[in-house]
Amino acid sequence: MKRKWRIGTIAALGAFAAAFAFGGLSSARADELSDLQTNVQALQKEVAQLQKQQASTAVQAGSMHAIYRHGSFLLPGTNTSIAVGGYVKLDAFYWLNGGPVNGNMQAPVGVENGQALLSPLDLHGQKLGGITFNAPIFNPNSRGNGVLQMTARESRLRVATSTPTAWGPVTTFFEFDWLGCNNLSCNNLDNVSSNYLPRLRHAGGTFGPWLFGQFWGLGTDLEAGPETIDFGGPLGEIGKVRIPQIRYTWKGPIGISAAADLEEPHTTAWTPQGQIESDSSVAYPALGGIGVPAALAVNPTKATWPVVNAYWQWDQPWGHLRLYGVLVPNQMQDGRYISQEYLGYGGGPSGNFRPGWFGWSKDNITFQFEAGNGMGDWLNGFDHSALATNYGGSGLYGSVGGPTTAAAASLIHTTTVTEWGGVVGYQHWWFPNIRSTAYFGMEHQDVPINLVGPVQAMLGINKELMSAGVNLLWSPVAFVNTGVEWDWAQRQTVGNAYGEENILEYEFQVMF
Image (cartoon, rainbow, N blue to C red):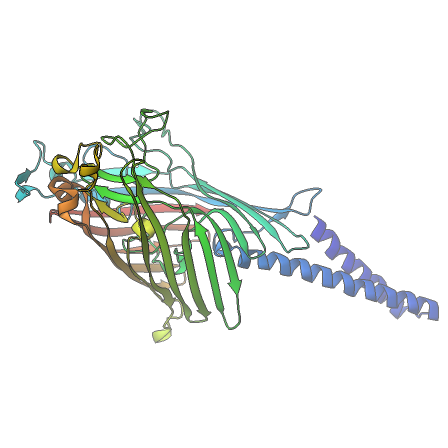
């Protein structure tokens, strides 16, 4: 309302000045006209400055402009603008093979951070560490074939505000979806009504070039990722997603920018008891009301120092190029015998390129590649750990709960895990509102079998993951998307057991 009042004032003053000019003016009235024209120019400058501040809000917030791109309105009685947006989406998944075998609700996440990491393994008598591995009594491969799921829980709501100040615009933003529930936290999801729980995706604010709160991790390059129907997206993408942070962004000349941040630390480790993390816990308050991982007397992973990220980026009309790096502090400490620190590191390039060949001006090539040692899930995915250790083993390694003597502690060995991955994609526009994207991605981690043991190596830890897919999307109007997608993924465990999935996916999305 305030902006409309100012613009209306400018128009009225302009008309008033024109009437005097054509009606013949005395010297005094000419002076009044000059004053009015000066006021008009001052108001025009003020409106231009407000528009400039609002435009810079998106720039200072990093990729916020890609998320909160809809119009805003002034809250009555304030100079704060608010924007509300989001979308409603229906996903339908049909697993041709490799689907969830016991009803675990993975849709709409079929690939990265979803069913691709858990697809049923082909076990047929492989031997490792003196143990023979066969499929259980029921056939998991058979149970994973022909599974249909439908869900609307990817639907989301966004709210953002912007307030001009002497320091520039100050913004806030929130975003929620309904992926806060699965069959481990809410049983019988489809019994009466889908009893999903809301989940916080983004919550933060910007002050000039600073961003504070939970937002995309600095390694996440949204413009370098292929467009997919699958919510998890392809395997091999860079960066930790949606994490608490303090970020500074610098905008330079000729499309150059740079950013650095401090992110919440997260130490992860593969053990003979499975994966443990610095935020792992179980329900039972075993020690002083503090939860500890199942089968361990104490959680030895500890987060002490923030993760440091930085990137340099060059934006041009043909696309962009980004170079990214990360330092990940990891610590193992049991409060008695074990106290060790390990510095992880990694990074790589990402970007997109619009080749413009054959007159296809909207076609787009995307790519991401990364490698590192001890960076854990800063190579996107909960299937990665920064460390591998025999802590929590049995026999020479002490009790299952950890070493109980200094001699047993001397037999505990820990090492950082080498990881690498990447994904490439190509999008072609058949018509102005019909497009297809094809992609291929993979990721790899080297986990020593002698530390984690044969059971985890064969059944619990993936060594290499690959995914590929292709889709066809139609936007009948600008704010509606619908289409189909085929996704394939394969996992290979450290013990060389394989699992595979093939999914047909459908979506209908209405944005607002």
